[in-house]
Length: 417
Image (cartoon, rainbow, N blue to C red; front, side, top):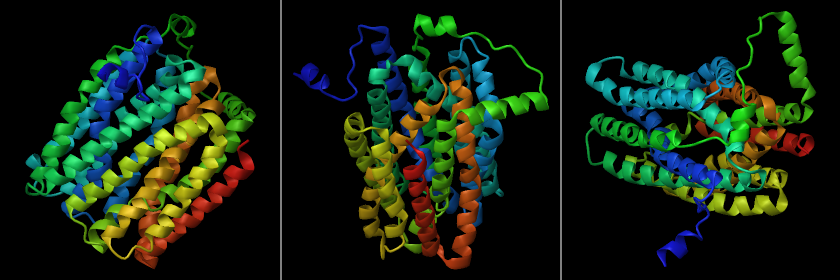
């Protein structure tokens, strides 16, 4: 009976083919990494606030990794493209990423003063190996699955990531209130880093199809210079679908990242939320995201990625607008439900459309170009949002973010076909 039930789950896949085994290992890798991802996304900025960070410092905590990505992702993609065997590089950088979060957990044992600054620096350094492994796995996904199954596999991967993040946030928020600061955050982040090492065991088991390995060759090195730069820019401009989508996404991401450093500030300082409430809100977001991935994956198969992109982006646009009006922390449970449901569809559609407009033979580079462009907004957006909050008030900053998202939505309607 349990076997029959498991076969009905959206992530079930038979293990009698290479594709099936690869997909299973990908799901297992995602589940273990999701623990660390959920803890870091939910609690690193709160950790900084508990250590005494200012609003501006929280902005830098969010923005500095994006600045690293702007200058690092394209060289990282070229490094990946030159590798005939890419998995060893991904395993090494994955290990270094986990090691970085373990260093964050150990840092308060070593430093008495300057802890916030050290946290900001370590969080930025983690971005270097994370950029390689994230770009590598994103470029790897189309090689592991057939085009017919790709949408299902991607949506299920996001679903598993959200489920494990939900568990991490729920358990983590409760544990934090049972122990003193900063030891509680140290134990939580350190445990997450160590447990996430198990994900590398499953990543190591992935085997590329023979045809992918056969066509992959080390690219010859070219001399740098202006002619090459002009040629590269012309190649990018010739990919008109990519350019149109990236332009619309660039504007929309300004609205996404303007309030990125303000969510924790609003909850902790304005609404006086405890760690338990912060964890509960994260659970609501992740639970609704899980439901959203189950829903949007099926809708996308029937209506297409563009339809999902427009509808889900509309909900993401409303999210900061209704958040600006909440009178107490309890109301954020409702707004967070809207955010989780709409963001899952938006994230899935953005990812699928991005893969579809990237040329297959240069996918790592175009994925990195897109990600680096979005990281311009991820760097400048939180800093601008923090400045708007100090100037106009935190709730007005959320309203401005919603207005910018609306402009991005209109550009998706106009430019994405």
